[in-house]
Image (cartoon, rainbow, N blue to C red; front, side):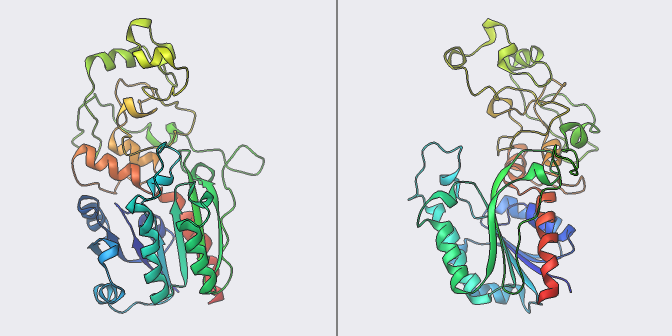
Length: 344
């Protein structure tokens, strides 16, 4: 029996792509970002792509848009909750984004899907009485079985370290988080590396676009930053630069060495952000070419397949990639939940 999926806060479609690879049927994606939704629509022509603010969408309108829903049904949700991110040093729980998960309650209560997948930034679960615990209270009231924890996508075959808060739930049967498949311990598969993900792409200069490989496009780099890259070995960073290339702030601080750094071929990438093609925003320098990552390479580090097309400008597509749930990670979560289908 095939599971039907409605993907809330779908973005460009990382979760949907993974769940589709797991064998599920994608019915609809919902997001307020019109540019990301164009990418979604292009890659999921079989699904409805709804550009809506979830706060303004009613359950009846969603039902009308998707029509008859075949069961079992899965709802996935990655509500924007940056105020709880570890990278946000100015946390503001009054930010309107924190209530978006609360808006999701209406749809869960109305449709009572057979399965739920929630993915978000670590930190939400540390706020007593916050949106995460309001959501688990709802699941308790509706008699869902669920499991949650902070997982790292690198432990599931993604060539990138990316720690996320994940919750899986089921109305019937057990919902369990998947066990690690990759790692250094005996019996696990070796971690996927940057080399595994991007070494096959053609060489490219900064600011260039490859006309045969879709989205193999890079950002422009200033001359001084090109010089910095020339002094940065594979896996290196600003600690390898001569004195005259250091920024004033770098001379005062010993930490935060990832900015302007190059990736290592033999290791997984660091966590990609919405600025994942900019060398000044993280360790996003190509291992040996004098440029940042291309959008296509960043997508590969998020485990997107090469036939997944991103629409928009280079900055818009990079943002879509950085915001996405890694495809292989979502696939693993989907396969784990499919074990419960037999219990329905």
